[in-house]
Amino acid sequence: MNEAIYKQRRDQLIAMMDDGVAVLSTARLQTRSNDTEYPFRPNSDFYYLTGFTEDNTVLLLSKKEGEEKTVLFVQEKVPEMELWTGKRLGVDAAKACFSVDEIFSIAEYEAQLKELLKEQSLIYFDLFSDDVVYTDLKAAAKTMMHTRGVARSPRTFSDITKLTQQMRLIKSDEEIALIREALAITGKAHHHAMKASHPEQMEYQLQAEYEYIFKKEGAYSDAYTTIIAGGNNANTLHYITNDHALKEGDLVLVDAGCEYGFYASDITRTYPVSGTFSPEQKELYNMVLDVQLKIIDAIKPQGSKKELQRLSERLLTEGMVELGILEGDVASLIEEKKHKQYYPHGIGHWLGIDVHDPCPYSDENGDEILFAEGMVLTIEPGIYLPADDENIPEKYRGIGIRIEDDIVVTKEGYENLSKGIAKTVDEIETACC
Ligand SMILES: [Mn+2]
Image (cartoon, rainbow, N blue to C red; front, side):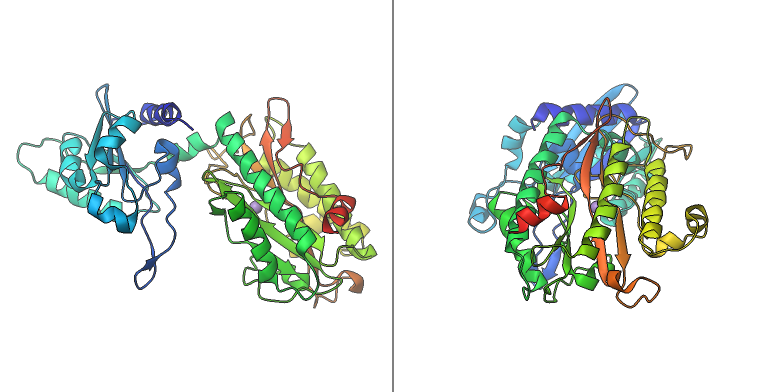
């Protein structure tokens, strides 16, 4: 994406702000152990507003009586350190890259912040994820408060993510293109792994097949920790140890998606370890698939996630009654939440720069946000039938199935962005062999 897009986003954010100063810091390097660090990944909001991927950088937006100012603080270029830490953009080169009013070295952040906070009473920052920034801002505000000649100092702190999350809800064509790219790689990985899976393979070995394709195809990393759950492990929803052997005759549930250009994909497929579904696996699988297709088909502008949630609960309960997993009248089963035992989670979530994109589900009044063109969400119904649950017909025990796709709401309805990834029994069995 080019700088014009990021500038437009910054302008939009300033337009949404009241008079005040917004401080957006990127992520911090995190120590893994001793002197090693986790790979760096920029803060999502910071990246959304700048496209900049270096650590130790801060974006500052100020607005006062019709005057607006955008300032970026970047790390200085230190040629003698480049042998060790790699190249940095530096202040001078940054001036040519960013359409901001001023660029300073990060070393000047504290001094410049005080300048910019003068006679301002409101500070926006990321309230829930950056305590270090908050501590620095409080200190700066306190200094201002006690500075002679300063009439107004910041006493109000507000959460900037309330505004950025609203902006991130609707994806532009450029953003959707990146999600498509991520999905193309994720699809390749699922197809590659379907072929590579076999009995006695360790779950982490199947995970390696995904990670191999992600890296080989230029993805930044996985967008979240891959779940490789063979057989009954699929009934542990966040199973990530991936340390059991896959068994002949079992299904494997794989929730895996890469991040490409800092955009996530999120795909779950459930497939037979040895390439062929058993009749009872096929019955369950086709039931979940049928539900998933119907839910996706219900997506349209002005629709809502709650509506899809209700639909998924009704359809899955009907399916479970038909297969003899639940007994009784569908409406009362739902009323008594009996279905939640086997379908305990939500139908999906927003997807974007974050796999669980932190965009709002309801507005200021608590009313649900209705679907609109450009919103991207996952649809992931599942049923989880533990091996030790004697209320379930024996043939179904120890099977867990989830099928997940990534969908964009369009003007007329929806587009399944992951429709190319094998999903029907036939497609999967073909992909497996
Ligand atoms: Mn998901």
